[in-house]
Length: 128
Image (tube, rainbow, N blue to C red; front, side, top):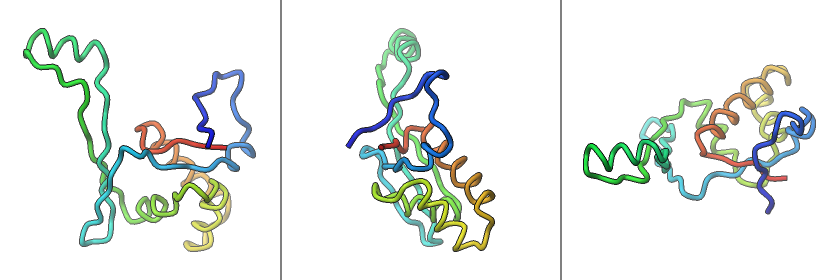
């Protein structure tokens, strides 16, 4: 499995290439399903070095890592559950569009923005 690293602006993927990537969940994250059916994801957050230094200096503690949680809505939960390490972004977009009777472009924009947000939080990575 080859995870992609962040690209420099000069080597950005094309839209077509990005849709062929496969999202994979961060193995350090965990999830619980609430009674309402939505998912809450717990994930580790590494503290920035300057913040850790400040904490050691002024508070006498050294928390190098912490954790956060993210509660997804119904649509986010649906997309999260489709991330299985086998489906490509395109597969997820197509399934989402079909389920919600959306135009491909509308589903593509919603799903890719959601995946981008998950990526920024470190909850998913992309593999070729």
